[in-house]
Image (cartoon, rainbow, N blue to C red; front, side, top):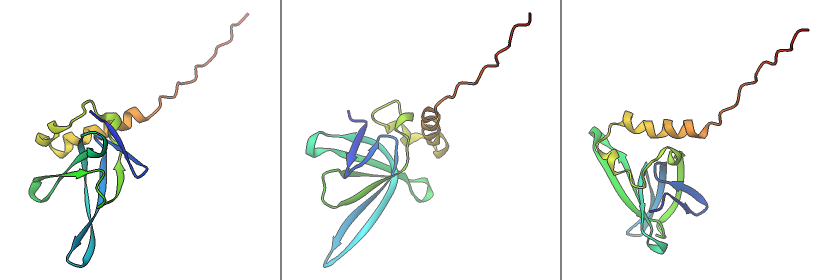
Length: 129
């Protein structure tokens, strides 16, 4: 079970919000399609690795797409928001039944883990003679 993957020098992982740009050829024309959502799983091994990306569409309908990561049609994958450090499972299928507010908890947990706690300075009292 992979939690992270590197695609064309762009590291991303399960729980990250990504923007996937894919090249599509129709007839003699070529166009780029952008799909933005949260990575809910990375599965497979070697050349057969693929990632499932889920987003919420119109009228709160969930849309999932599976992208083969070795496909030549994938132009780039950009990480919009980091969430990997807030993830506790390799597969986030449980988010299918959650609201957007509950899913946002993953990103706040990741932000809390990303912050480094700075120790407070202690006041040093001198002893009186």
